[in-house]
Image (cartoon, rainbow, N blue to C red; front, side, top):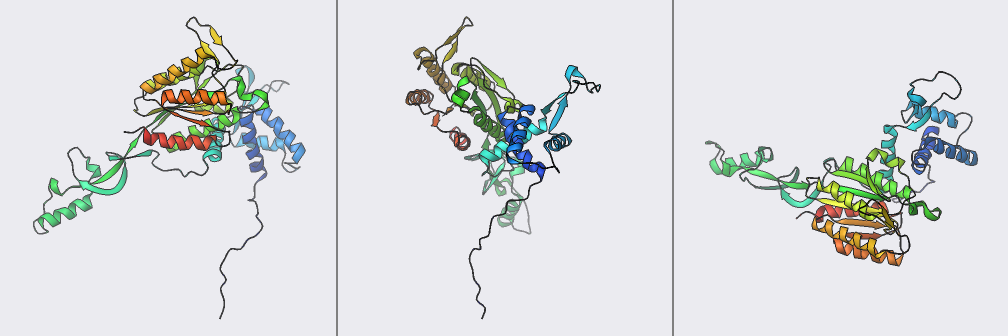
Length: 380
């Protein structure tokens, strides 16, 4: 009698085989994000890494990699003076920049890094927990009601009712026989993502803007692919606030700015007022205290020392205004200073929103989790 052994067999892990291009491309994507889309700087860093870690050999060099990037449509050459072709003279060449295809790849990478455990759904919307005239079948049946669409009538169940009620020999189908397959109502959400680009995002040698950009790119890719019926607007705020398109996220840079949180909230609410969706929300990623206001005469009132009572009270007023408009604000504070945490708690209380005090590693996951929860809570 042969004994069959059951169990696990362990072996040495073999990393998946990567082509020379794929190995460099993975590093290049990270570098191009850190350099805010600056191709030349990213390649300089790649060459330094190559010298230190021997990433290439004589068979495949960095120059070969650049040619492959061109051939695959990830980068393009932009000529000076608007010329489409060079004349061959020295100094006449153009500079390299990434293409829209590369921008999309970077957003997809950010999505995989931050929301990698998620499975994409085909429908692309969130359930509300409420049944009604929607577009996702629940598997439950109910009687026909006036106003139900014909596409929701279950013909199999309706015909079965007709046979039971009227018999096969004298077949007829009446309104009382009709059965409707219930559907799940799906809500739409309009979201504004606010990103702090004040100088403190790179202060003291700590790079906070790159993880914030990754979160923004991941969220943008998530909403546009998984929730295509939703809307997402992105704005940045420093001394002032202004909107940016999704395609500009990889190029986002910190400026020599203070933090005008009020201007960011004003612009976010203006954006949401124009949306027809009843479900609206604001995400705010910041690491610093509000330190700037623009006065009616166009001048700026700035105070970087502690929490300025005048500026703070303006922030609380904006939080209350958003609450009256039924716009919850979820704040992701990338700081753990007790006085800043206390300010955010008061701000959140005024808005009846949410706040997370987090390090950068868990930022993306919490944004997604709260995004899902908000979509359910905002529906009544």
